[in-house]
Image (cartoon, rainbow, N blue to C red; front, side, top):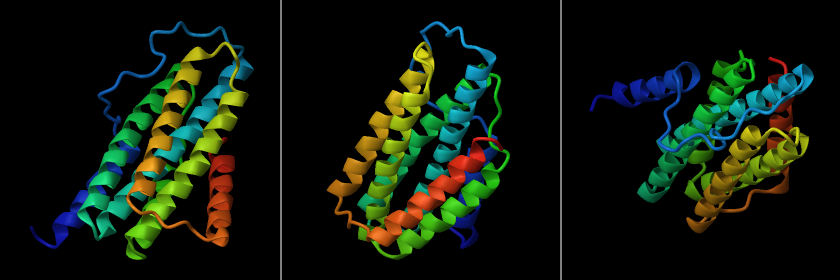
Length: 208
């Protein structure tokens, strides 16, 4: 393997995440449910929520890729890669739901990916325990974020509810996986910085 091969692999993954249709082995949750009779305002709102969730999954792909690239322990690397695969399925589901609602993906996805990959790589360089702690905190914040979206969805929109519920279940499992591998809890200042970054992302992705 040449020195360029890892770089080529990372660039390939970035391009596939941002521009290609994401794969999935599991069916999209709720796809057998009938489409809800939503007003135009409700459809735009749900599409915006799903766009935010899609951006979150783009960032998750990038984070896990950066962390896996710099992981020191093989178990950590494999765990990151497995979590990344499930996040790829989330990409598939949210992208399809956005299309069903007549919405669009974030135009800033390349920027989100680049920033998240850098954060993941830096976290990985700080050691596996810190990197895994970053996963735990990220997934806990995502879980809270998804819960807030469930509260905002129209009650009749069973398809969107099913997708977000399954995503929430997967994120909890990822957090537990990282904790079980020896995650180190992050300091309060780091958690606050992550929340502020997430707020910037969600606010921007809601519209762009």
